[in-house]
Length: 147
Image (cartoon, rainbow, N blue to C red):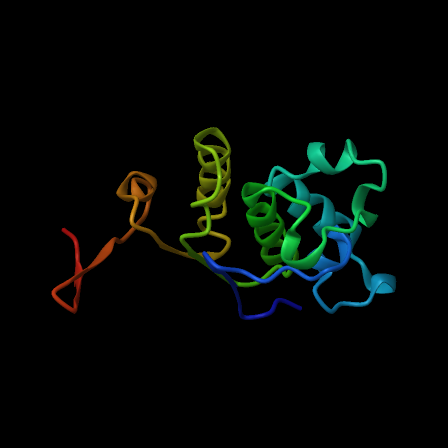
């Protein structure tokens, strides 16, 4: 069953636990969907990084992801949202800690979800909105559709 939506915020919370627990975020380990997990890791470009860790998915990330870089933490939160397999994904400045190459990879993957999911991207970077069906802008406190 699909849940309604997943929100990927700019400022996120990471558990002082394993990478796996941070992706599952409350789901029981015995109910892991391996296909969704694999998809989430690939989507977030975390799969190679995790495969190079001695403890793999069972690596402890520390309080609020202290043992991860900002970009790795942000990709972990993206993986969490993708794993939830929701109808609607809201990306709120969700790629701001990523290097340009990784941001471009993930943005391209986001656009490949069009037609299968509703994608809402909130950003100050208009360059990543080039493939959006509709773009809204807040001007003087008013939400306006760009034409």
